Amino acid sequence: MWGPQDRKYNNPPTQLSLKPSSQSLRSGNWSERKSHRLPRLPKRHSHDDMLLLAQLSLPSSPSSLNEDSLSTTSELLSSRRARRIPKLVQRINSIYNAKRGKKRLKKLSMSSVETASLRDENSESESDSDDRFKAHTQRLVHIQSMLKRAPSYRTLELELLEWQERELFEYFVVVSLKKKPSRNTYLPEVSYQFPKLDRPTKQMREAEERLKAIPQFCFPDAKDWLPVSEYSSETFSFMLTGEDGSRRFGYCRRLLPSGKGPRLPEVYCVISRLGCFGLFSKVLDEVERRRGISAALVYPFMRSLMESPFPAPGKTIKVKTFLPGAGNEVLELRRPMDSRLEHVDFECLFACLSVRQLIRIFASLLLERRVIFVADKLSTLSSCSHAVVALLYPFSWQHTFIPVLPASMIDIVCCPTPFLVGLLSSSLPRLKGLPVEEALMVNLGSDRFIRQMDDEDTLLPRKLQAALEQALERKSELISQDSDSDSDDECNTLNGLVSEVFIRFFVETVGHYSLFLTQSEKGERAFQREAFRKSVASKSIRRFLEVFMESQMFAGFIQDRELRKCRAKGLFEQRVEQYLEELPDTEQSGMNKFLRGLGNKMKFLHKKN
Image (cartoon, rainbow, N blue to C red; front, side, top):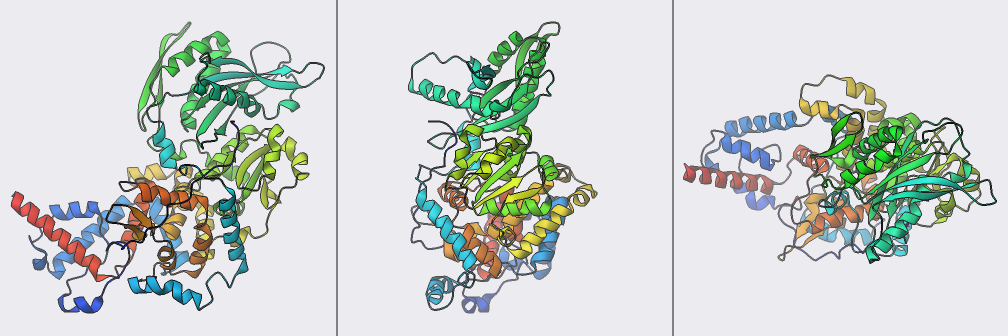
C-alpha cells in the first residue's frame, strides 16, 4: 500500500460562466468618462497605502484634491513601496526589467476577450507556428488523461496547515542490516520501533505497511555493504506517498555503532508529517550524542519528544531530558515561520551543477518531465532533490518524488507519468539497461547529462531565461552588496537570493493571475484561462503559458486560489502585489475607484472626529 506512487488528482473545477468584476480585467469605456476626468495617480495602490493616505492631511472629499496634493501623495506612496522592497530584490528586479523590456500586459476590453477565440479560429494560432510547443501541450494533456483523480491537489499551504494540531512525529525506528542465511549479503530490518503497534485497528495496519517500506529507504544500497571499522555519519531524508496522496517524511542519521573491529552501520529514522528538515536534524544530533554514550539513552529521549506538542510556525517547544553526568537538560526546537526553504540547501545544488544545467533541469520540471538524479552519496541526492523542488515555489510538484530510490524499486523509472527520483551511482549500469523514455538523467558528480531531450534550452521564454541565468551567475556579487535594513539581511543569503530570483520568474509569467479570478453571485470563484494568457504582451511568454497551463502544478495552484475564502498569503503574493503596483495604470475606472474609496475613508474619519 505504501511506497512511491504516482499522485492522483481530481479534475480542475469546471469554470463557471461568470461576469468579471471591475478589478478582474483592465477594461473601461473612455468616451463615457472623458467629460469628468479626475487627476490621475501614476501607480496602483494597496491596502497598506490606503492606511497611509488616511493619516495624511488631505481634504475630506475627493473633489477637493488638487494635482499638487495628489503628486505629493504619490511620491510618498512610491517611496514607501521602495522602502518595503529589500534592496536585493530590487537588484534582481532590475536585471529582469533590463532583459524583458517594457512589454508586460495588454490592455484587454471585455469585447476583445469574448471575440478572441473567434479570431483564433480564422487565423493561425501562436503555437501552430512551432510544432514543438504543440507537442509539449499534447504530452501534458495526455499525462492528465492517464492519471487517476483524487479529492484535491497537494499544495504547500495544505501541507503546512493540515497537521497543525498533530504530534511532532509518528514513530521512531532503528534499522539494521541482517545477514541473509546461506548468502554473504545483507537485508535491512527494523530492529527497534517506538511506539509499538499493538492495537489491531485500521490505522495500525496501515502503519505496519509503512514500516515494511522504511528499511529499503534507510538502506537503498544494502547489497553493497560489508562490515567497516570507520564511517562518518550521514544525514538524509526520504518521502513516502500514500494512496490518498498524503505524504510522510523520513529523517535519517546513518552511523556506525560503538565498538571495536569491523561492523555494519545502523540508521536512526524519525517518521513525521512535518516537512521541517532543520528541526529534525537537531533531534538527530541529540540522538547521535546520546547514542555515543549508550543506546539506552536514546529511547527515553524520543518518548519525551513524542509527548511534546506540534509547534506552530515560528514557535519554539522545549523538551526536558535527563543525561547521566549532565543532569536535567532542556532542548529547544523551533519551527521556522516560513518552512518553504527550511529543508533546502542551495549550496549543495550549486556545488554539483552549473547555472546553465540547473536552468535546464528547472525547465524540465516545469513541463513535468521525468528527471533522474545520480550521485555517489545519499546526502547529495537528498539535498539536491529537495532544492530543485523548492525552486518551483509557489507551485508544488504533484507527481512521484523519491529523493533516494532503493535499488530494489528501480523499475519505477519505466513509469510513463512524471517523476523526480534519485539513484545511487551503483545503480547506474542497471539504469542504462532499462527502457526509460523521454527522461532527463543528471550525473550530479560530473555536472553532465547522461541522457537528455536536446530541447532543454528552448523550453523557457528566451528573455526571462537570460535574466535567470544572469542573476544566478552574479549571485555572489548581488549578495555582497551593502544593505541597510533588516529585511535585506534576511534576503542576503544564498537561499534567499536564489529563491527571489526564481520567484521573480513566476511573477513575470503568472503574476497577473489574480486579475482574472472572477466571482459569481454565489461567491464562487473561477479562473478565466484564455483571457489570462492572451493578456500577456510577450509572444514567447504566451507560448510558454499555453504549455505550462496544462500542467498539474498550474491546475493545483489555480484550484487552491479558486477555493480559498480569503486571499492567499505568502512571499509570492507579496511580490505579486509589488509587481502589480509597478504596472502602468491604463484604465480610468481603476483610478476613479481608488478616489471613491479614498473619499469614503475621509468621510468616515470626518464623522469619527
